[in-house]
Amino acid sequence: MLVACGKGDEKKPATQVAAKVNGDEISVHQINTALTQASPYAADPKNAGRQVLERLIDQQLLVQKAMEAKLDRDPNVVTAIENARRQILSQAYIERALAEATMPTSDEIKKYYAGHPELFGKRRLYRFQEVLAAVDKEESLRALQTTLEKNHNMRDLTSWLRERGIKYNISSSMKASEQLPRNLLPKLEGMKPGDVMFYPSGNRALIVQLTGWQELPMSEAEAAPYIAQALLTQKRGEQATEEIKRLRTAAKVEYVGEYSKQDAAESAPPTAAAQPGAPKPPETAKNDASLIDKGLTGLK
Image (cartoon, helix red, strand yellow):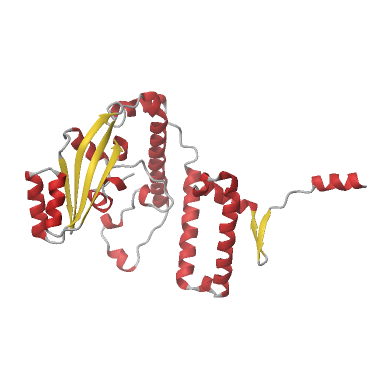
């Protein structure tokens, strides 16, 4: 009998419930889903499941209190839940529609490699020194630009800023070609160590000095996985745009009220990258505003 009981226990299916919070269940599936989406736990994979479970318990306690306070009926909360639902559903549809996107061929990879020497065959590792200054007066901005045209010495520049009480941050960074805005690469290729770039915007200005660079080429074999992923992402973006265009053509869309008065150009459908649920295309050049906001060290 004891042996039989033991065998029966072995056949008993493992529970799918990881915890109960005031009677509400948290499932193993919830933990596994969270693990596939969360990277912060990768540093301690052994305890990752436990960390996620504890976070889900905290979340469930907050959800219970929110329900007690009837926050699920709050108009703002209802709208937020509906927006999240729409985002999830649109993303799910577009992911399924693009599931059969074909991987790039070896010829496509070879062509991309040859067409972008600045990213691969002539790839460089650049070193920069950056000064981000808070210039709140137009005359100070013009004076700063004039000073830079005469003198590229960053030590003299920071002294000039301090003398005038202009607040600034100074930092250094190293960036490979692919980490920089694409439209910046041709300019960098023509620069020498010591040359500076000046980006004014409103009451701020970013001064970037090229302090040096070194060749860091990547062979076609080394670059192939990255190129394949970039081209696949590009294909998916193009297919997403076409799918959305097809859906809009087949649908009856009526603009109502003040929106019905807009010009056709204003009512034109956005690209796939701007649509909810659409995959992002490969990274392209970032604008000067991004440079001002984050500096080169903030670029990805």
